[in-house]
Each structure stands twice: as structure tokens, then as C-alpha cells.
Amino acid sequence: MNSLGKRLHRFRMARGWSKRMMADALGVSIPSIIRWEADVAAPNDYNHYKIEQILARGAPATPPSVSDEQSAQPSPSFRTDEPERMPSERMFSERMSERAKEREQA
Image (cartoon, rainbow, N blue to C red; front, side, top):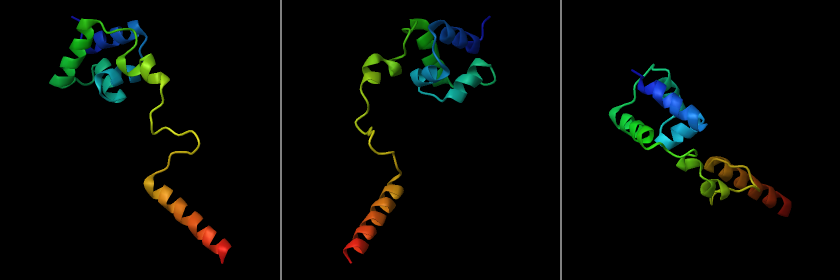
């Protein structure tokens, strides 16, 4: 009998999904996919159910998280003009620029 891990691996390879795509479709981490496919660990009951649902319904070649609709539109918080910073970094940077302006005015 084929193990769940082997069936999961075969399913993923047949559709050309990466481990990340499978992890996104199931809502789990990539290391979980690696452990399950290698039969090193078994998913909990809820994740087992989600895996069986995907295997049974024969999901499309592209998982929902990688659909054209989502990949075509950047998220609203995405900005190309400034690198992402942590709030503390942003506050520090703003404070430093304010001090520099104060020095210029003095």
C-alpha cells in the first residue's frame, strides 16, 4: 500500500508543484511537506483531512495561492520606492532626518 507521503509526493510531482506551492495550498510549512513526503512524520488529523481532500478532488495544475489573478496584482502594502523596514527602523530613520533638518536650520 502506498503511504500518504508517497501519494502526496506523486501528486505534487505530477502537477509540477513546488514544495512551497503544496505548503501554501495546505496552509502548512515547507518543512512539514518535506517530513510528510519522506514519511518521517505524519500530519495531524486536520492536515491529513486537507491532504486527502486535495488528493481526492484532483486539484488543478496551479494551486489557488498561485493563481494568475493574485500574482498579477501586487499587495496594497507593496512599495517599490522604499525598502521594507521594521517600525522601529522607520521611526529611527525619521527621527534622524528630523535632527539633521534641525541642525541645518540652526
